[in-house]
Length: 193
Image (cartoon, rainbow, N blue to C red; front, side, top):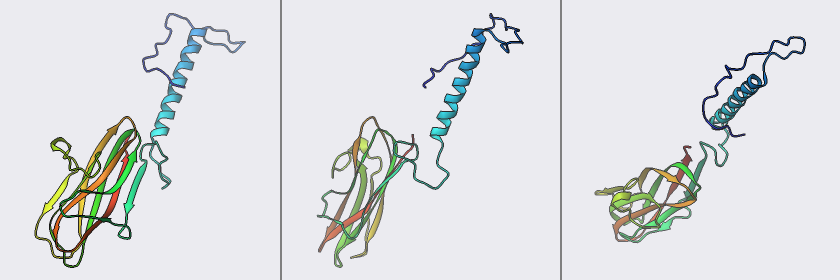
């Protein structure tokens, strides 16, 4: 039962009844006051219990604070890349709520592939570089990488506040020459409230 917030005022104007043989000690107004206080305490206790984190080591149920989601794209099913062309490494749809989302991408070049730059990000648009105002969660490295060596890059952590289900993409881009490149990784999310 939902209880409207507010202050419950005792009925000071209504004197108690002193009918001890029947067991009744309060007027109807005082009885209703005590019931209102008990109802509010019960509702508060239920709210606290519903928002309490799990202590059993079990997963938080869907829709509850602490719910965890993850999508893993393994080295066994990597995403093929073209030089300087964005790809989606993983996709996840999150229901309405307040979510923390993070991801990691592993870039796996062919043996003779030379890498010039790598980038990873989380965003609402499929395989699209984030705009100036969407740079949250965008990470890039431009360096002299060792030829043919795997590189891992965190896409950073972003906060998603949404009122309806929304897809999110862990995307990546690599600048490379000679040979081939594939990517795999993990996209994870936890409901904060």
